[in-house]
Length: 302
Image (cartoon, rainbow, N blue to C red; front, top):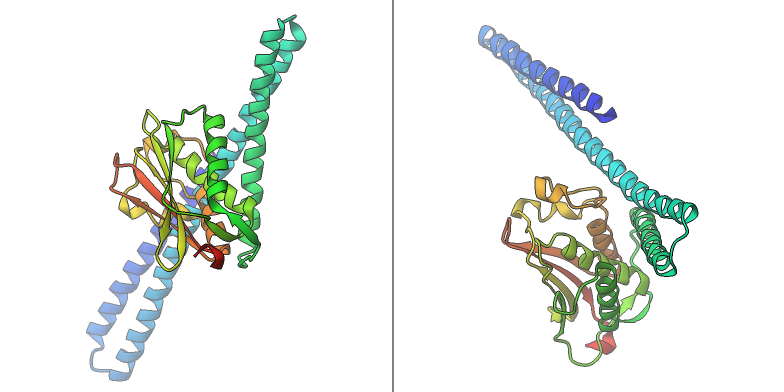
């Protein structure tokens, strides 16, 4: 791997920094003990000692962050490569099979359907990468137009049921908002955010998919889209990190789930651009997770 060399190099610099810190401590402590009578030099020595230690610590922190960032970028590139290469290889295989053999019409329809699904997967991957780039370059709050949040959620659920071949019992919906549920914003961005939350709940479900999506009233004239699953769960220490770009929860179970570490980052960016927020709750490993997208209700919806 290309990045393994970077990791080893960074580890060497970290070790060197630790040695420098230890040597600085030993030299300065020894110097202070030998020259404790010289008050001015003692003060200067303490100040310089503090500066050296601060510089070494900051350098070590920087190197550790760079190592983590490189690892995240490496994982992202591998994930994108896999997400692009797999459907392309599948489409090519089916096309070669159709070209080399005389297939029945029913078989051809089946192959065409698979290729359409692979194309949708490619488009979804490209769309995620493009939206992540747009979210990172613009954090301005958007006004947009009036969006019926209830209708948008239902559209996202219908799409998820079709894409993942789920029954209504596997992906349930409950609306606790009477009347209209209007927010101001961009319907396409909101649809992307809700779709990402639902897709995550389905992907990280342990075995049987059992996801509940709720539209409820929140505090301070807000509307909440809550997506709850009974999946692998999230450790408390990870609840804030999961919304970072490229971040994926470490672990054997989570590592087997395909993804680029962009979905929740996009949701967080969309929420901020709409004047809202997104947060996660979980009891830990095996306890499932609940993600809440909170948005300010339009004046006519309050």
